[in-house]
Image 1: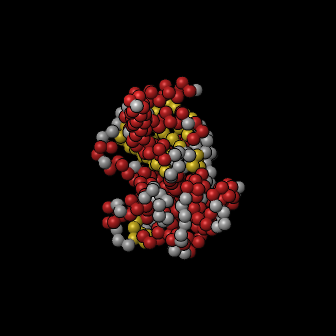
Image 2: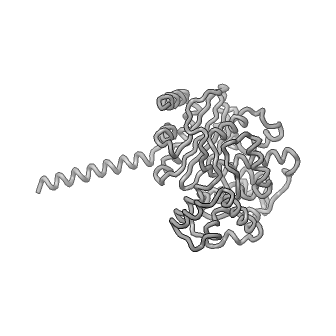
Image 3: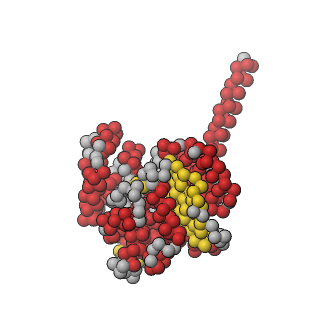
Length: 363
């Protein structure tokens, strides 16, 4: 009897230790987690870090990955270019209700609501300056703002900008909020595996065509977005897997253009600084950086980031890392670790050396 009790106690202790280990893994950040995860999960990861024009670590350079709202950097650049050409007047104000046409609750992890509750947004009345829509897209990752700007700027112009920027691995950008309704609009009788198979069989051109058709309906009918839609794990995966995709090579090349401050004309660059480098308003950031710009993207399956910086010592950094098909535990761990990782890469020479050693050992 005593042996059974002791055995039972040992089992309880072992299970508690395992649970404790799981908690430590899940709920504590690790400043090198991002780099290690990419190496350990090459089929779901892409990574590129450049410091002072030297590649520190790279993986799957040209593999297109779903981008989430990191893709909105392209939209922001097209916006700034059109302002520079005089096609858009920065004095223009937009009725806030117009943005609601493309707002789908629970789609963007609360991003649009965070923007709506920001002091900047609240400080305006019924209308908001058009530049604040672009800032909300970048700073808060508002999908509604993204889709509104796609319509205003023209997706043909945005995709032509991709070519001009040299993004050779990039898929076309299309109205990705609208695409969430494809299953409901075109496949009402299909569920689960049948639905996945049907949509996966769509070509890129057909899928995008459906998205544009729904986008037109959302423009015409302000209530379209309010129709009941079941955002299940299946529909989330379908939607996430077909998001506009790009490579870390494309985005680090883009980061280098932004970091140089010489690629774009002065008017465009000044506006991009205002839209992308919003953290430079904080004294604690200005203490370390001459300039820094960061854009993240996230879905329940995806975490992506692209950043550039020049620190007060003159070091330049460009980095992009894209992860796909993450489970809930991995998302949680990434959410906790990415800021520590970014900070370590940007401020700690030892971390850069560690990453260089890690990646060189895998080559």
